[in-house]
Image (cartoon, one colour):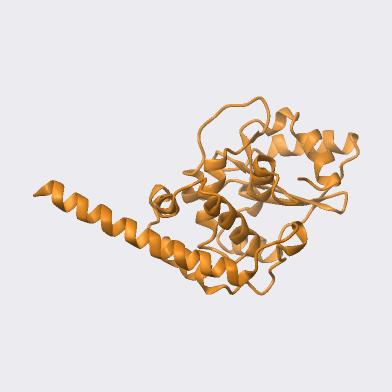
Length: 239
């Protein structure tokens, strides 16, 4: 379920040739698969080391002609961090507010996120597969405590669209297995970040934070049991 202004912008962008090589990810992509909650933002990843800035500039010009005004919305702290490192923030990330209401981001992802995406060609942007979105949600849960991420993971796992062990496998695929423990610590804490937007207004009858916390604690226990069983099975095979 997309908000009307977000849907209008998406209908324009999905036919945009300048977005070839881009993948729509995040909560909006997931909502297109599950229709589970209202989505507001458009987050695109680009499978390349740097963003194709000329393509994005061409996109913005055509979008303006169609009535969509892209205004830069980059976080100053992020820009300054890149400047201090001798890099240009906009080579790797560009954030916009379109017509003052819809957030749009373009990101050249870090390797651990890029490894979650499949190399698939499309004439314009493609919507990430459910498996790609799940793995990306797993990875980001180690980097931030955002309840919308928690709810999306809660739903995907509670509906048994993915096995518990696949949560851990996402970190192995990323080449960052140590981050699994960080992700679990955040999920099981039940304590969102200071600037969390919340998730309750995006759907009817949302689960409580306490319900999700209990679910993730049980998930952690099941993963530990699965890992122990696999280790025992491997040991028997080696005897």
